[in-house]
Image 1 (cartoon, rainbow, N blue to C red):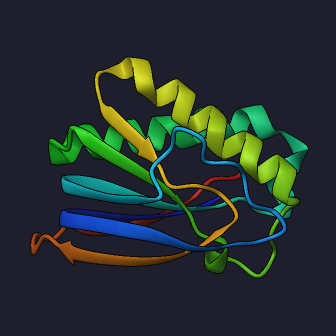
Image 2: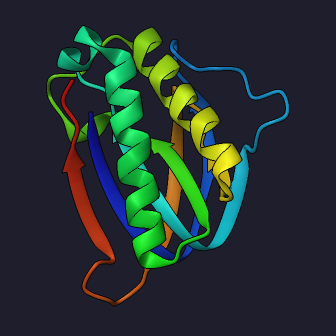
Amino acid sequence: MKLLFIHCDYFSYVTTQRTKLAEDIPNGCKSCGFKDALVVFLTAEKVDEKDQQKVVTKGVEEIVNISRRLGAKNIVLFPFVHLSDKIGSADKALKMIAEIYENLKPLGFTVDKAPFGWEKVFSLTSKGHPLAELSRTIRP
């Protein structure tokens, strides 16, 4: 799994178009904005399918460690297939991202997740400190 972290003063997105892989958004946010958030762009890769649970566990650990290190209490997970050219199946990626979301919620953070499989417009204003942009690669 590829993770791109951007510590933002402000982040917003608007869903624009449903793809054939889109999840439903019955109670979710189609247009959301967040102040002082750690935005985590995530891409599940084919290799992650060898041990999805291990990737989820390690992904949660990385997100928690970086959030705590930065003092970020708000986390936004943003599915973003564009971080890799070795992407995994959509259904497995959706499941892994959902599990990461569910595992983060009880840990004292405010967690949101942008909808999977939607075209989205997003805007961000990143913070200007040395750790405002980070990336990680998680392997099973």
